[in-house]
Length: 372
Image (cartoon, rainbow, N blue to C red; front, side):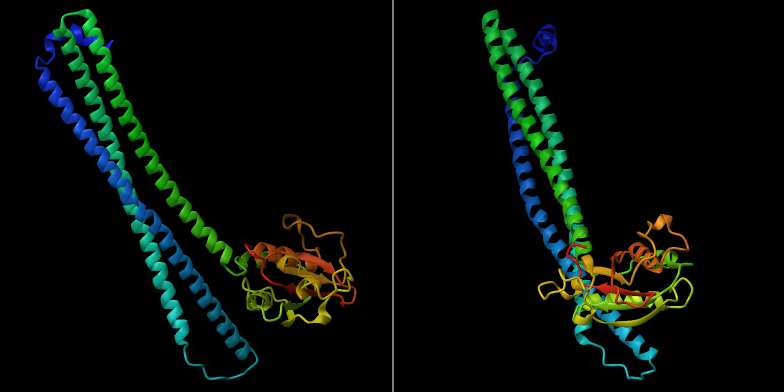
């Protein structure tokens, strides 16, 4: 149909075959140059893709160092609070140079990593924009090439004068134009796919960074308000907090729970009594013969299922209601279980030990589960 249209408009066609051939040759060289530029831009994006992972690693290391500093500061504050609580006066120690270096190093690593990710993202976005522009230019050149080819075909056919020869020339020229158009379209599609792949990789790297932080952070009470709301107006009990020996993370969680339970200030603490905060010993193990042997970890033998557990003498109800159905008459251990779950520290399974006195709750804190 295009060919017939060109023949019908023959007076408006160019009359110089050599000029058209020169124009087509120039277009083919331009398309070849564009393809070379696209390859060069694709190659230039490679280092930036790898740099995203390098900067992500720097951020992860910086976050880990910052967590170490936070835990170190919290331990110092808890120690100072404990000394002040028991009336012990002690001159402050010399500031830790190691802590300062770690904190400064973590800030530098996170800053470098975030700025590097931002720069890499901007550079990749810029490269993608250039690649899309080159793709559009390739399509434009391809359309122009098809137009020139059609004009040349019509002109040669008009000048040939014989229908058979004109048909053969038209078929050959159309085939050549079709091959060139197909090649250009394929290259344009490859450029678009490459740009989409770069964006997908960058998004995946950001998600992996966030997931790494969530997996590596220590357990903590993330929402004290929900913890206090869950205990407000509920029965109270005497609490003993026992943690895995020589486990700093378990001790820090126990100290935080004690602080939030015993603080008498409104909305900051529940006003409960915590009589004990100490490491687990063999005397704390349950009487279950299937568990009570040295092949089972001490915290598990004492009732710390999945890293945290609650132990009481007995329970006045068959089971604890879910937090949205709880009322002021629920047992204290159920209220504490719901409060811990709402705070983000983990609810803990309830275990019974008939040797315990009434109205006493043991919180057993074991080793943190990986990927909590």
